[in-house]
Length: 311
Image (tube, rainbow, N blue to C red; front, side, top):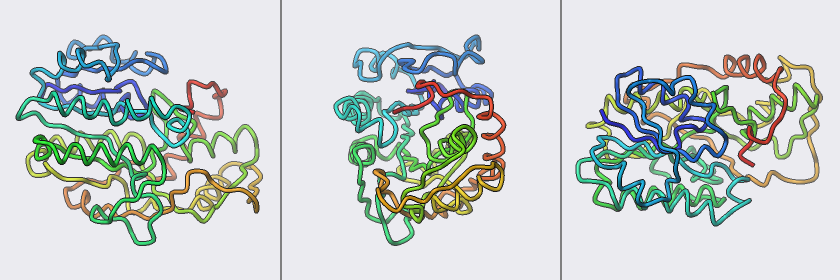
């Protein structure tokens, strides 16, 4: 297939691009390189890989590079609660505005894979299936929910798939330290203390390479899964924040301090069902403990630089 990937130099994209190329696809990537071009250096010379250094909000660029593509994988966004809160205008124009731009300029018959988020659920008491009404608590979650709605209310909705990802963790060519598990591991290793707010809040996790792999999985099932929304994660990786911290403590000697005052500004608290995507044959390839061991191995030698955090 001829595939256009937006945000390909990001945390998930830098894992996905080699998988697409290995599968034989012709890949064009659009990315601003906000965090540098090093995440794609290992594939830069591949003959089936084209790099466009530009902004996904640039209509001329989007129109030009949508032409002739079979599949658009839209990853580009301002990711996470803190980054969106820091610059709300950029978050809306990038996350929602670029989605509208792509949908409005797609050709009939093209397919769209949209990187959504479990953040759109917000705080939900019941187990979150794709049928549970979403109630996003943050600007990030709202931009993802509104983008989903725009896609599936458009004429291209029947050729689109939305991926509501669990919280990603693990090592990627474009490592991020602002993600919950990655952040906890770094603090355990270097600060020797984690201050835990609202440790009973439940989250759900998936290794970044399995996030990327889910796209490869769906390419092979594109006709049977079109027009659907999928939670993407593992039923075996629903944990509270305290459970995550204690699993890390079994491997790293650090002090866990549970704060009695204060709260987590990211108020998500939910458990998610992944039965729908499991029925398509998807399963994660990297378990939580393996991902933790990998993070400990790498982050032990990493010194904090702001390029490794979205906010």
